[in-house]
Image (cartoon, rainbow, N blue to C red; front, top):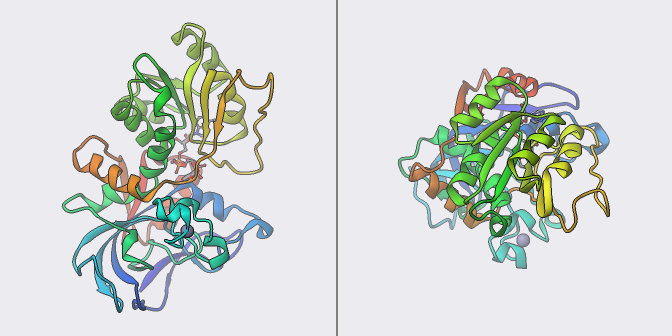
Length: 346
Ligand code: NAD
Ligand code: ZN
């Protein structure tokens, strides 16, 4: 079968022929119906050798949708032909975190050598993929796999991030979303659906600001130091109750603390390249600000995000590519010229 692989440090993703897969005991084989491109893939492919921990060659793709093609020995709970999406942050399934559905924070994954598909294990950017356990599969019914695959990260990650801050996002509150890309444009929608907040979106470039307005942002502003004054003005001088940074570049990490109000939440989701740093501490951020650095989301939250999409309350904007076009799509992601989420349909 064909797969999109990252094969050498500093290389570009390549479409290659790899061995066909067959499910071992407990595993599920999927015919991939869609695989999303995440900026984290770009981040991973930009890491120097000493920081790269995902193995080579790496079949990319941690946002997957598929149709169940075959079941390994002992698998129950899914049937051949089911249309599903894949929960990506696989854990041991048994530790305290995993038992609560928080496999993204599994306490034993590293020790047991468990890695997410596309970030250690072979990923979804291929004609087929193996899923280690049926519990990682969420049925999507009639939902379009192209729109559904990104829910597993571009949907789940902002859903988890917004969920942490719900108590601060009641009527009259203000939330700032920095970066209206794959994650951010879903984040804007989630804030509108789940909270009473006015949503202020910041990005660079008209296409991204148009997208922000299209998905429901109340204000869409150019991301620059001028945004500080604009957000102050919108909030009676106080600043935003919650600031979500879906970029994580030095520029946004410098900006975000200036946008948040006393007692607000400052959530950093983006992991921009290099080693950007955020200055927190007395006098560096407003009093009693909570800084959160979430990773991906909980298993049950993916079910909730899928439910929102099935009800039409959240919709991922996508641009589709064939498997052969995946390297071009990654180039576009790197250059920042994709709008919404790029999705490969093998
Ligand atoms: P994306 O490329 O789709 O979107 C990034 C957006 O940021 C683009 O719209 C871009 O125009 C915008 N941007 C760039 N510079 C900016 C600036 N200075 N100010 C405001 N906006 C700016 O990326 P994505 O796939 O949505 O991922 C977003 C970030 O989140 C990445 O760093 C990714 O690695 C990270 N991520 C983190 C987690 C997690 O669990 N913490 C999960 C997934 C992705
Ligand atoms: Zn665990």
